[in-house]
Length: 255
Image (cartoon, rainbow, N blue to C red; front, side, top):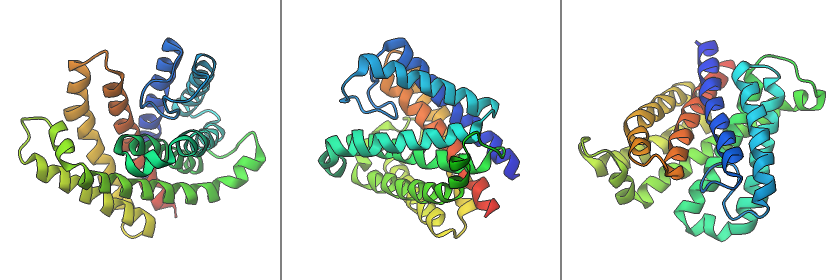
């Protein structure tokens, strides 16, 4: 079961990275809320190509499971660098007071934490011995980062419940109830992962919660607005979080 969760999580995690890379390389600029770089970062005409190329190499490495431990570790470090020096350093006040900026930052933060967990799960061996020896500690840090981020997302659902309810497809009943229920699920899963109490079950349920969103919520919105990059990013982030949650479940079994 853990092997299946790891493989599924790795694939779900890698595919969005590859599409992020293609978007960066195709457009040569920062793409709205697309992780890991916020849109206000300078030097986009050069560094967007560099970021795209790096994500392409890392995403392919994770997808084929070749030097995946090294790639996942570098990915985690890259995402955390972007959170600290590009998101927080430039717009720390926005992270505190603005829901959109906060979401951008914590999506990148959570995916960086999940990358560290992935590094501890994939095939043994790493070209750089220092990074290999650091993986167990980074995975623990990554678990707490992911748990904390899920709690933040849960709180967001309470702060912006009417907006969340508006995004839910019309054919679903009780929109506001679903918005609050999802917020409770986020907070409960985050606490379970952080305390390691029922963390495997919570992570699996979290991964299973994200998957229907990809299909029922985000995919129709992407089809309706094919040129809206924000809708594509939301779909890919949800898919990546589904994979990340399965990785957390596999990691919980191994501890």
